[in-house]
Length: 319
Image: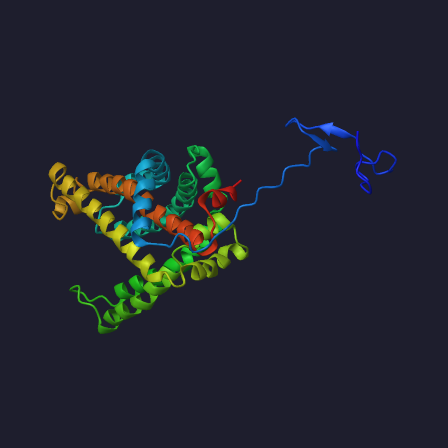
């Protein structure tokens, strides 16, 4: 076999000589084939800009295609509210002190369970965006493993609105007229709404990224992701809220045909309270997943635009 002068790979007398071997491709080479180079994903931020139409359309597509698992999740988390409400409706008459107390308690319980649902729906949404089909049990397990930061973030975001509602009730007049100070609280809603939009993807950030400090870092993460896109995020929430309100209105119209007028004394104090309560739970089970899926979609698309991170990379964080 001819050798090349000065080449340690062709001169058999050289101690660095390696005999030629046949590779899998059928050609002669000196030594074994080198290992394949690792495939690295190239991130290109800014290629896919965040748009209101795409965010809303994607949220509806994810919600419609996952309507069965979303509804099952919502029903599972709504069962405690349904059972507690049915029991309390038979014990406390509506309009009494006890009835008002359990009504407030049910609203608080529903707000807490909605955060459990939001954590599970966030995982399902991210999984669906990458084309996955994770089971219900796995969705609940993954969602509940992030529930502590989600609860903390949700409590921080919801506390100002609950305080405004409580203050308004304290200044409510006997005939339903509000004190001027209570009316002035409406002006506070404007900056609160701005902050709410800025922190609107904090729950998905707390679920996906598992930030430290019990999820407080998720607020800063949401503030950074929504910077420069808050008007678009705002209009996306408005459109989905209008669609959800239309769905709620259709449910009320259907209930009026099947049950009766919801404003009558029978619907408020009498025998029609329980059917309307159950109908409200059913409506919540259908619409809550849609409003919970939107922040996850916005979070995913904002990361795709600003960081070049695709949905499959986000889903890999869950393990």
